[in-house]
Image (cartoon, rainbow, N blue to C red; front, side):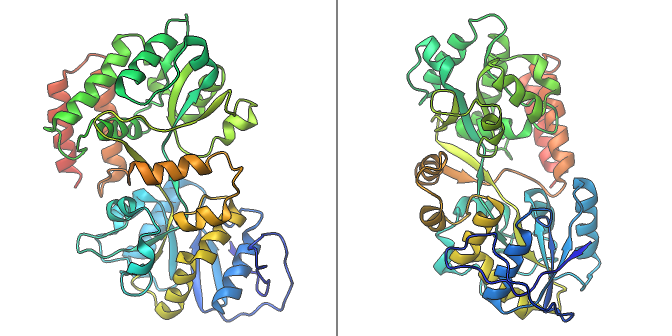
Length: 406
């Protein structure tokens, strides 16, 4: 499917929804492969991009199926296909592509030093910087793997704060005293648990690529301790986010880690300061949190690089990031833009600002063979927490997985 709308003017406040029809052109300056075309405000965003850049932009809708989308994008880039200039890719694809030469470096043209400080530097370095130091993408939004707590349970068990490892353990133990309820809830299906393993490794000061690190061992020991103490359940070994969230909403869990801004909880009438809400990630050995994004990248085979630079500069600008927020409701990747355009009554604004200012912000640890690595680590983790392999066995095999998937 191709989608095209030209001539709408973005209002000064970058508010979506107002279109001024104009005659469409058949001559395009560049082609963008987008995941956003099904959004109801996509045409307004596209018109804003054209108005700001002076470009006629052709858009190709990316497949909605994850595997199909990644296969098509891989084919476009690996074959030197010149029909697509700019592509939106996720962290998994960034990891797989950033050192292939398929993506154009943007250090001197788009992601220049004067704007870099407004993005999460840890994410830029971890996820979209190549081995030779080239930044190959522009983040389109910012999302955190936040900690969420059930305030009703906190109040019930008399826990006032969860700021340290001791606080965290105390809450898990107290919340788990009620029959059928667990202090901690997870998405421990083998392709999902990776996020939580990596989160705990970071919190214990470890290194996900070095399984001789003592912090890694502490993290795994703690996750097994949660199982052994009855603070979490092995029933969640098959659970993805949908199942975890339903149990959390039902009051079966006291705390979870989850992406996004809690729309699922709001839809269930369970979001609020006195119900389920975002909480600052506690500091164990260190305070650390993951962020993710879909980034706009430039196909190195593009024959329209100057037009692409113009478009990407707009994406990276204050106006471009604001347009993404206003049209697609994606939290701005630039902290200065978030401060200006996100309303003060937005319930995640203050916490996101705290995350950015007080915690180490990183992209998730991924390797070129991303899905194979994620699945292998998840399988090993499930074996470990069920007692099928020892911690030493887990660490040895995890290191083998790191080396095999680099």
